[in-house]
Image 1 (cartoon, rainbow, N blue to C red):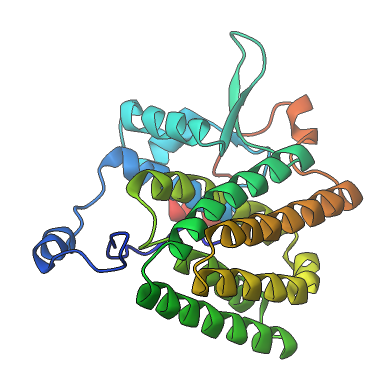
Image 2: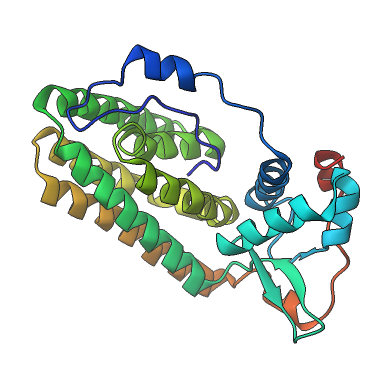
Length: 276
């Protein structure tokens, strides 16, 4: 459930890596342009909770902090709005941008979308040639064993969160095509917004996740695409149901802020530091 995914070498359906020439050309990513820079900075603040759900995002304040013109800032905010991190509220002529609230319906939808995307990824993984899928399943089982061990040892929540995320990324990145990967990377960080807020309660259900992970790995190893897809979607369906129950019990976040104006973005010390 990590917001920033490290680049991985692409694989074809047989599980083999692309040519070394292709790798060499893609090994040195170009520095981000201003739109990407603003987008990444703001998204990181939103995902981490430094900009809480419902917080107002004032375009003028972002422009001032980033030292940029309005054009890249506006483009970055538009992208964040398209991806669901930012929302527009208020009537025409008095609209303002806010960090999208965390709600039961939204959380459930995001979890189910990721479930379907990763279900397709698991299906592709189970369709790899035997040697490739066996090696992949071995890596998945190794990560899952570490997750189970660390859960029993009461490791920090961040460590457990990272291991769970690594398990899922392992059968997504390097397996699926660029379109599915782009969708996954755009939506997956929204999962982290919810997971960070409810992490302590969600971690109580880790034994169930570990068992479901084992089923996913076995289905991939045996080359059963239908079973791999179903097991992955079941894993996320379980998480979606759990999240909906938690939000119903503890309440939604950011909704109350919609009823009254909020001060502009970046009033917090951490946000100021990040965007100087």
